[in-house]
Length: 336
Picture 1 (cartoon, rainbow, N blue to C red):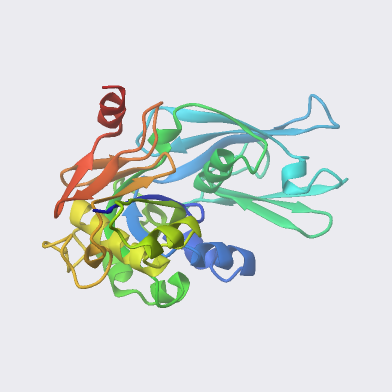
Picture 2: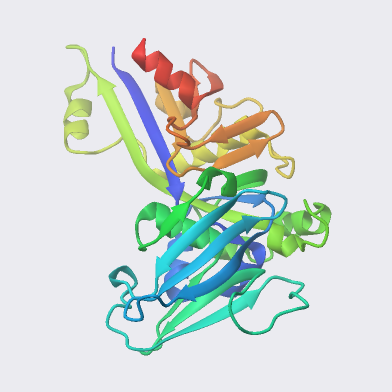
């Protein structure tokens, strides 16, 4: 008898965005395309991140280096960062003139002399002489660093800056996620109801949105001699017996069941049993894990991506039962 298994790995479709940043950048055509590729989204909360001690090292005037720290409110540790201003990965290596603009968190520091080093920054923008703009929030810089799409050095514990309290999980398979979030009642409720983690922080800066798509959907099927040969041929041809939307439906339900976010009204208590999603496809086992070094906190614990040398935690669905398996435990099981 055939045994079907499906292993799903979710990755960030775009950098985590505070609610304020989302409102500011969602209409940019390129950013919009990346955000809308994410069909699973999570409304989360984390302490405000900021750039501190930002300055330019001009020891080599032909190769200036932007130096700064990334701080997280309430956390004593910080990330020490260096980023060359002229770099090929940002297509800035042929520009003779670059402009740097900075934007402060609210409230703007009382003492802001308008000269380096800058502190209390929400983001900074690099403008090339060809009017190309590159903006970086702390999370966006970390995102591109992890993707190796910028040249930068970061010294410190990244996972401490990618730690999120999950308030709501949703899907956007029937419409673009940006349209889905426009006037989103749950987002407005969260902004109104949830208290800031730290005094003086604005909810629009602490509440953030994570956008996920799939990095991989690995489907395996074992066959006996009596099984339908057509299924084996379809698998060899790269065809799966279900489409991406079906997997997204299953992912949304699995994460809601595992994390039970308090702003989700429907918690799918009978999951994995459902009329849609993957249940009807008689899979022996299917799993969901994270590609990025995120920590998703919920009332009973956390689901972590690959952090500090350990594999990602995994949501495992098997025999009509869902469980969360620790990544370090998975590694021990493999060795045994």
